[in-house]
Image (cartoon, rainbow, N blue to C red; front, side):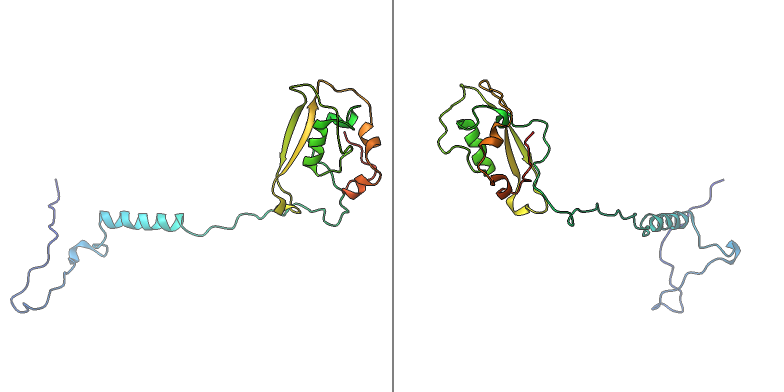
Length: 182
């Protein structure tokens, strides 16, 4: 049996008080919860759900920052790369035009001011390594390093670069005096 549907319309005015609106009265037969309807229950559930969803949560755990080595003495170290420059152990490093370009890019003093040896066409193969700025050198931007990784004219002579460097050059550039390139 279907319940008759009430129409939601304003109450009728009474004959005694035509100027003032009349108040609706709850029926006493409906009991103490006569005001609750199916829609008001869903509204209450919706409000409770939103309150739970938007309630402040506990703060996530804070991570401790990584320890810094600011107290330790710093020696300049080359960032680790997979490939190393082979020019440091090449017999032609003191007169090579390709290595002269690498020195200029790194800001090193040149082993030779007027190199005369030019490698063959298409050689050497130069790897370009790009490193993000560290906290000390942020203003410098990204650091770009060139490494010669393959050369058709390579002639192995171990330690040639170190022998050719002018005395005190490594220390002036911020390297450890016992620095040996890989």
